[in-house]
Every structure is written in structure tokens, then in C-alpha cells.
Image (tube, rainbow, N blue to C red):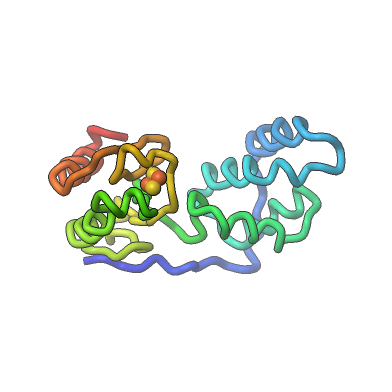
Length: 176
Ligand code: FES
């Protein structure tokens, strides 16, 4: 069984960043000249995503408030980069490159195989909350395709057998 994660959030939710988050965010902002705080946005989005698991509208609005910019400026960046999750995701997020060079060596078939194996479609999360499947544009490892990124690790030269083994390793906790 699978389910599609819906972008559910309470628009009136009051987001309060923890002291630790604020310290981290200020450290990033302080690397930029005054009035150029917006340049810290991508790093701030990473910090917020690490804290909340995904970026809801109230979280993005809070980031806008923190950086003294318009919410739309946060949405524009967060929606452009596939590494930012705009809905809840599973414990492990598989991001499979689908751009030309990877497609030529079988990324389409690999994506289909993962969909069947996990019984979800791209953009969905397994009902046990273990895996989310996403696609990504070129991940910069074109000579190593087909490949997928999970957190900070690239899994390269994938075959259906290798990806089956990978899924089991993540499921069993052999890979964190
Ligand atoms: S095309 Fe897949 S990593 Fe570049």
C-alpha cells in the first residue's frame, strides 16, 4: 500500500525557531554584508528543513520574517530546487537523476523499477513512512549513472539488483 503525501499544514500555525536554530541561522547571516541577508536564504532553508523535515508555508513565512524579505522570495527558491521538500517526506528520500546522460543509461527503467518495488509513484511516500521517491535534474555525476542521491550519499552505476539491495539495506538500518 502507498499513499500520496498531501501538503497539509495549518496556515495559522505559529512557528517558533529554537534558540539553537536561531544561533545557527545568525552564524550564516553574519557571513554576508548588512542588507544582503537574503543571500543566506539557501543555507537557512537547509537549516529549517533539517529541523522540521520539510518546508511548510508557515515555516517559509517565518524564514521570510527572519530574513526581512517577502514570503514569495522564499517560495521562489524553495520551489526551484528539488532538494527542498514542500510536503512531508519519508525517513529516506531517494532522488533519482532523470536528465539526459542518466536517461541514456537507464534511469527511466530504474525509476519504474523503484516505483514497482516500493509500490509508490514519484512524489509519493510509502505507507510505513520509510521511503519517498523523487526525481532530480542532473546531480553532477553524469559519468556514474544511473544514480540516486539519498541524503548526502550518491549511489552510482545502479542496476535493478543493486537498487533492490539498497532498499533492503536502508530498510534494515544497515545504511542510515
Ligand atoms: S545527468 Fe544524471 S548526474 Fe548528470
